[in-house]
Length: 339
Image (cartoon, rainbow, N blue to C red; front, side, top):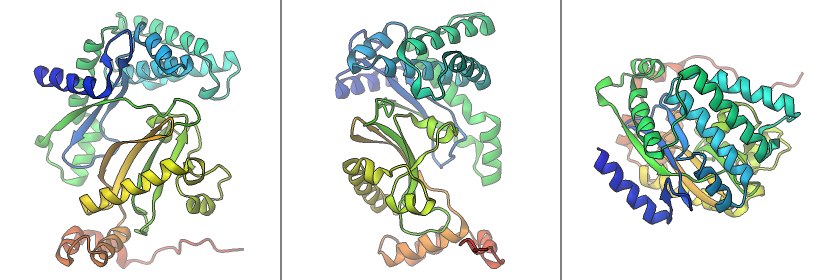
């Protein structure tokens, strides 16, 4: 496996014109799980891997944005500390909130490069005390630590419970995917988001999802900032005053819609997507079959037959007979009732 990883890294380095662990134009990595069936949120991920005291300075110079570089470094230490070294997220959160309060910063996006440097120093001091060893500076040591942790996360309690609930055999195991990093936290022309190609609650054939400007993936689900709607229609429906992706970044939005159509036509299913926009350019990170309600599953199956994407036989096979019981009971009418 080591030989395969090294060979794969060389390919990625050539494609990106970057070098893993280099002091100039460093390649940073995302290390993700890849099980054969969708298990959203159950497995671990490590982002920004490859940063250390040398490569963070190279990233600052390369990007022209020291604040972004140090923000990425503190994010990496948080994720690596939690996923690989077993430290609780609350330990990092306590330090971060303490520093923000001391500095008078309400949001993470308000923290400057020098202030993030101080947060990183406090993180490392805490890890020395808690673990009795220093944070690993060698990028290859970081990579093997992350690879081992992602494989091990197949057997974490939440993944085991999820498999029991959904009748997924434990001996299937997981793959580990190693990707080049792209950055949604590179300023106001960058963003990250998650979306479904159709509404997972109703099955309506309309994009459904959220995004955040100047953020990385975990920010969307962390609840620290309020995400924005992807489509203008959704923004209006939710009453949000923040601009939709459709209005804020129209070119990236058009690219995203085009990619959604292509992927649905290829996989012939409703999909769950993760994406990043780096300085106006769209990058797709991950795609999988989207989870949906029984009502949505039925509508999506029927619609896809009418659209010519699947056959009637495929549609019948996609519906779990036990789930139809949900549709045979009275339900609350979704539209609010005026009083």
